[in-house]
Image (cartoon, rainbow, N blue to C red; front, side, top):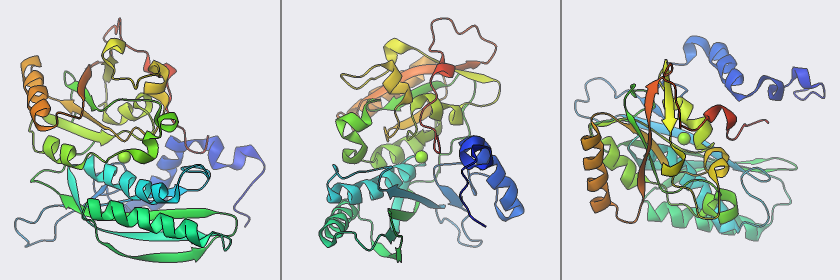
Length: 315
Ligand SMILES: [Mg+2]
């Protein structure tokens, strides 16, 4: 069977990403456990083997960088290696994890330049050393016409708790690290530092109720943290927008690689967390940008998220 089709109705693009994920869940059936042990969170959580007492939950995540999709000829090869590991570390940070090891699979056109590949590996190695991630193996395959590098990252909870995307409730505050939007234009998409220490710190705070990292844009990703019958009420004047960019960019641009999380409790508790954060991470902004409201609330003065879709894979 030819896996490709020129008739749009037969393709995955016609179905769209969300419905495709639903199909994949159905095809996998009972072979795939429910989130967070299967699909649906930033990392899969592997239950600790029985009889191991105080062992911390193991985490695993996988993400590629693809020539023409995630980087192009304008990006130095070292930066591509750095980005590949960093975006996986960002997924680990999103669950309060710390890394154990990584494996890398490359699919390469035979015409790939040797000096490009050297730069890639040197960038990857430098980032691995910085975050103490041993690169323990991988695979090389031939892929005529393309260049795909996929990294699988293994880790474990940095503390007693793994923080998932589920757990937010109506009334929780919504908060975000860093600044949003303009990732491509600013070079942030390959220069960012994954928020590992920050993610571990947040996972250890009992008032943090759910967390994820921002990869497809706040306007799209926030739905994953929003429980049924709730609606995120965000305020434009609170959003930390990258200088030179606008609301549209902050909601719709992908690849922010910041942490998005919800906070339970009274406004005073949220203020205390922000004060403690500023002492601990004085160089990383933390901003409360809104709150989860009942879906039936009027929402006056809040951002209409239905107008901002974020990054659609296969679009
Ligand atoms: Mg993620």
